[in-house]
Amino acid sequence: MLETSARLLRLLSLLQQHRDWPGPQLADRLGVTVRTVRRDVDRLRELGYPVHATIGNVGGYRLEAGAAMPPLLLDDEEAVAVVVGLRTAANGTVAGIEETSVRALAKLERILPSRLRYRVSALDAATVAQHRPGAVVPAETLTTIAAACRDHQRLRMDYRDHDGTDTVRTVEPHRLVHAERRWYLVAYDLDRAGWRTFRVDRLRPRTPAGPRFTPREPPSGDIGGYASWAVGVDRYRYQARFTMHAAAAQVAERVPSDAGTVEAVDEHTCTLRAGSNSLDGLALYVTLLGFDFTVHEPAELVEHFGTLHARIGNAIGKRDENGPPAG
Image (cartoon, rainbow, N blue to C red; front, side, top):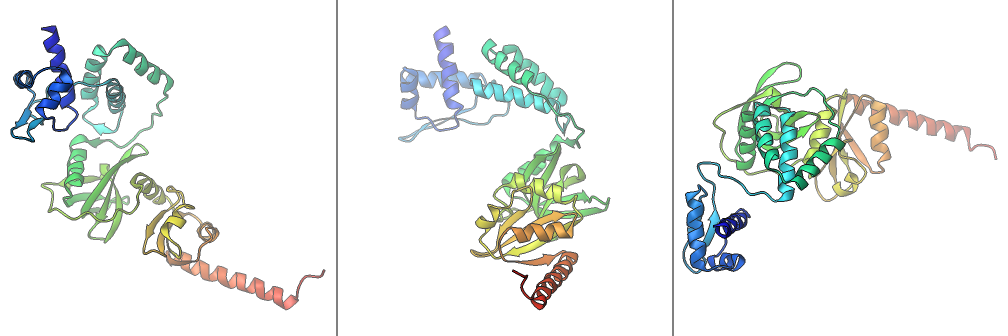
């Protein structure tokens, strides 16, 4: 009986790798006959594991999703990752899962082998959590948005802007990002024809989700960095947009993700967006990047560049009038 139970656990571990297993290959891995594999699969089904079987030359077995949650087998690294994740969730910013996370954590830690319990406790002892208040969002809101991102479905939502204005938005959701103890949605805003970053605690999805859409090219290859920048730039008085007359890859090498975003226009030009509380700071920053550029917005910055151009032109003109410095 012990040998059979151990073999069932081994079979379950193989099936949980999310791939199709031909019967002969499973039999070879377990050191049994194909007939024994069939019997063991039947036993797993009796325990609640939905193992799907196909017949024929390419037939095999696959563990499918079922109506109930059967026990899982985790390797050492997976078990440690789950414990760390549950501890984070218990003190996180998702409403309604704190108590559930604590219960699941208690169950898992009770059965952890001593070697894994030592690793987890060492990590916990060496880690200092930075407890800062963060906006809490309902778990169902996150799962609704995540499903729309996964299925490429438009999302209609009620949204409260930072100034308290209530609006209804229709977006093509791309990714959820957790930054600075808040959840953000990076999405293409159809009403404003551009990429936007929305605070999830300020939105309420309208269900059901809208029609499917073809995903657009994302605003950045680093969505986490893009969201962090978008969140930070809202604090600045001025948000600037430039056309850089250089390839996006060249400009991106000199612009950290938290300092600005770079979007390719074509092989030779790209768009740079950056923010600052100082017009002089913006002018100096983009100039020192070392590329030719055109400034588009804000209007105050365009006007300021005109003033700087005239000032520098006057400085050069005065130098020419006075002649070269004495040797």
